[in-house]
Image (tube, rainbow, N blue to C red; front, side, top):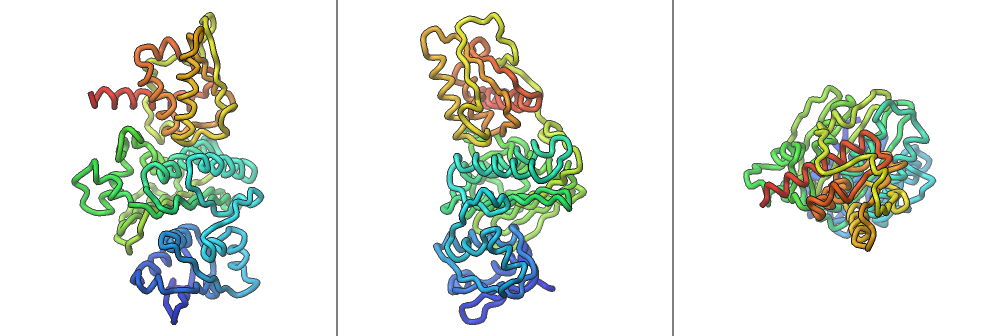
Length: 401
């Protein structure tokens, strides 16, 4: 069925699959007319997808509007509305974060909420689907970076909406994240003055090292996520303003002009049966400036910090800042000459976390960092992420002097 959106009175009638294409049809309707809508009729919708429903929910939430939902009783769409939480999102602008239903949409506003969302999403994937090498690590890294960008850069008045779906039959993991913020173009234009339009902003955003503020980020998130999508043979779409990019299963990127969306919507699909290399995808440089791994025997004046005693996920800058303060305070105490940071049982760290935690710790301690910090029980992947974060932070600091 062709995707159609039309208004009768104060009711918005939708037909076909409620996906990104149908969301674009809705946003073609002038905003003044959309805001007069009181009811959304999904009786003729055959399926609902996050890349369609989330941008529309976010748009209405941005205006403080809620809609009554009409749908034929007993249909599979009705079940999806309840199971995933779409009904309450449309009608009450909220959703119950039921941990028993991992595929339910989540509404988040804080970095701490991101940790919980990442942990539950990864746990759900681990329990429900068998994944090839590095798929779960790549999924966790991308999820952490994309959600962290919402809180760090988007200036979204509603926070963010996200959903993770695990599809064992199709051997896929999908996640979607949407904000109602200023969009990529406005976010980047303060630093990059030559951005021509929203498609140009997307092209820039997926380049390595591009960020609106080097103090707040190092420009790894969308770059790494685009590389992971290409390596997986999966799918990535980024919709912001009037521009949209789609990376297909062959790794080819296409750009489209779209109806205006106030914010940024990101959708990623990974194939779970295709091995990945997180480090190859990130093109991380294995460099170890001013850091010593897995070597602290014979060192006097030791104090220690086990990361898992303080957090369940290492996905955002707020957690990194908290742990950085702990390390610096431990080292400020008499007789504490060296802090051993224990990464035991840490699956993967986000690059943003590594930068905020150890990149800025290295910057704070300067030449004393190598003598006063040791890292133990760290995996090779995390070691490379941490090393690269430190090298990038120090290089950025030297460049700005």
